[in-house]
Length: 53
Image (cartoon, rainbow, N blue to C red; front, side, top):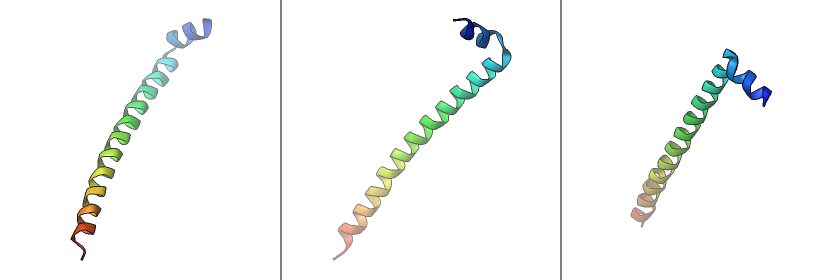
């Protein structure tokens, strides 16, 4: 528990926690965008394949 209190008291601990939260949000946004983009690409290729004779 003393490690946790030390991290909370130190400014470096707060900064690293903020960067960790920011990095997690960026990673989440990338995952959501990649999933959506993958679905759109799949739709485009499906349309192309369906239009082939």
